Length: 167
Image (cartoon, rainbow, N blue to C red; front, side, top):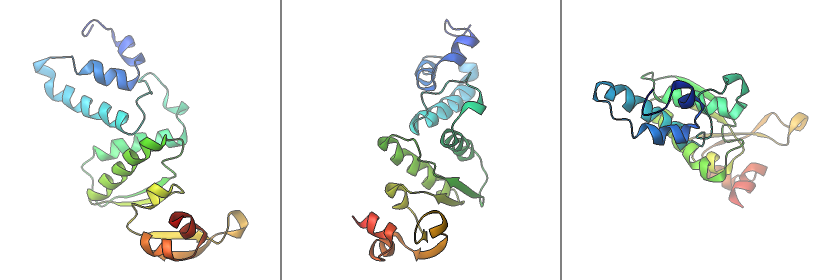
């Protein structure tokens, strides 16, 4: 038992509750381990995954949840010069969590990595260093590069996406 809880109880807690509970665990011999675990749990909460629990099988995560979980893992890695590809990582996120996701994408980039994001969320497109817009429509009416450049130039470019961003 740790601070009155057995391991099954700890694993069944939502990550946001677990992070808060862990702040009360004071064990000097495990301080470095606890600090690392606290940082990891706080990262999950930060990008809107605080509702998950450790006993949830990974196979039950949605595509967006799985991508965000991997993103947290990679942020803790010392690897650089890696190319990451994310397919709509903001899908299913509450609007206030999108900025947190954007911050994680920027942190991955700032570590010296290349981050490619397929996204429709205007707030995420807005943080891009470089944009490639495919179109001119969806499905069989798309697939051609209709714009390539900066977000500012896209807004002024007259494509459907540019007009949407500029609106």
